Length: 288
Ligand SMILES: [Fe+2]
Ligand SMILES: [Fe+2]
Image (cartoon, rainbow, N blue to C red; front, top):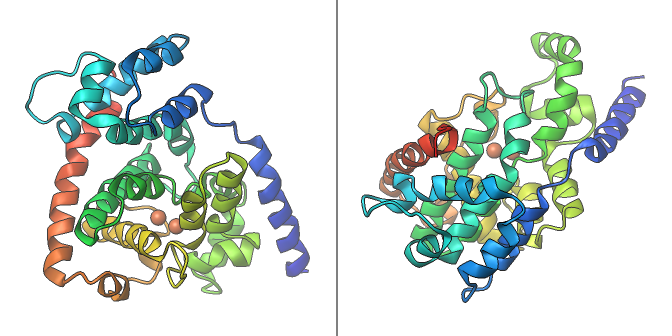
């Protein structure tokens, strides 16, 4: 019987993907335009004119100490392009693009916006790790930002099955890391892969979502290792308190495979935590 229940829940989880609203078209278009290093501010403004708040929202993050430092306020998209560049601007657009989705997740988190903050912390950590190991820093940032996106699907269903799930965990018959496959017959990795495929994200994003808990893959192996380690270090840093917390394997084989020493890891945790705090205020501060 439990097998039948599991396959019903699996089907429900997959069906739930259809109930998730698509990502914002404006931000998606802007993100694509920003792939061109020669993109002009006029072109971006043209695209953003139907969404007047979006420019202000992008500039708010661009003005955080993380991006802007102490070198004076960035007032226009032109200034943003010159000062922080198209690649970092794309990172910011991706934060805004996924914000409402990441903020909605409540199933795994205990406090408001926890999942959103955790995803951004992973992105910030991944960028630092990528810098150390010679991987694309912006791609690592963006893939890490969305690596757990599948949790928004299961998060919706976790709330409904809360009593059953708590009983199951209390009985000691399963642990949180096995809960997804044992109860729902599907993991957040698989759902993340499906969701990002549906939204036409590039292959690197899809593979990272699919494989970040099994970084043994050969394809995009370095990028997946980077995101996998970022995920782990955010947990070790204490910035993450989500329910599945440290259930995933916390050995240091990923760091070793990337050639990072204990010293490097300590440095990344310290710098990553400071960087995240530099960015955090601009994510919640309503005033622009
Ligand atoms: Fe995950
Ligand atoms: Fe994660």
